[in-house]
Amino acid sequence: MTPRITQILESARSAGWVLEPSAKEILADRKLAVPRSVLTDSKETATRFLADCGGPLVLKAVSPLIVHKTEHQAVVTHVQDPDTLASEMARLLSLKGCDQVLVEEMISGIEVLVGAKNDLQFGPVVVLGLGGTSVEIYNDTAIRLAPVTEADVTSMVKALKAGPILEGFRGKPGVNMAALTRTLVDFSHLVMDLEPFFESIDLNPVMCDSDRCVVADARIILLPER
Image (cartoon, rainbow, N blue to C red):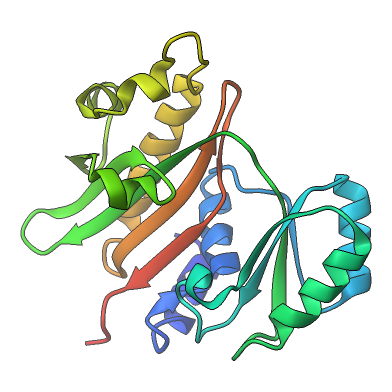
């Protein structure tokens, strides 16, 4: 790991988890795709970013006191005009502990869950399933020991009841399987390097389409300090 990644993890120990912008910095360091973004408290900076991207945007409050953003109305999607951007920026900055907002391009596609757990007996395992709230409703996931191979990813997709959605179903396009495979393999090697630090990692959702897979949300929960 680079000194910067170690610094991020060590500085997050006391909070017990890594803030999303830093979590995505860790992922991007390993060439996992993340949305274009800017971290700011300035509506002017955010407005310039909107003009550059052309919208729509996602706004997320960044606060060490807000782990689950949806429960605190700390995420705003489909932001496309400067007035909405300014008013929602102001609202998010008023939330507890929030002094910056993560402003990101909004990515479309099939929502996929990619995750990891640090099992006390077996070590790190990698999890794959449909993302968003679907994972909680259907309880349909595939698990393999890290690191995973391309063959492992293929078997994980086949093991899912929702596998046909990823592969393409009834004329609907599936995801780019090469991109999904590369994402899972690269993620699993990162997981092995992070083993001394993490308890669980959730990339949910990873937005996948016929071209690419992009990590739209990321949360890294750290092991308790010993």
